[in-house]
Length: 115
Ligand SMILES: [Zn+2]
Ligand SMILES: [Zn+2]
Image (cartoon, rainbow, N blue to C red; front, side):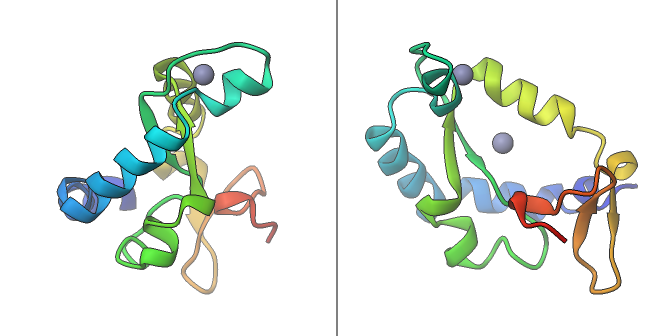
């Protein structure tokens, strides 16, 4: 079982928390349009608040990561699907480095931090 799937329950608890719901609401009210579509010159309603730093067991309780607008991105349904589809199979496309950090096999650190 992949790390991501194992921790789904814990993470769902986070997504259900009042803190996150409030944070998400505020972020969407400040970013009503999909940030990626906007860059491409399209205006799509943002429906999802995506964590640019993938939440893990270690960081999801850290408000500086999980609730930090700096690390959030407002996405429309399509862009969010694409984002997760491309990096979808966490077990296949990610591995843990020596420090236990989740890394992409593509050589990009989570959240755009270069290893
Ligand atoms: Zn979009
Ligand atoms: Zn997402």
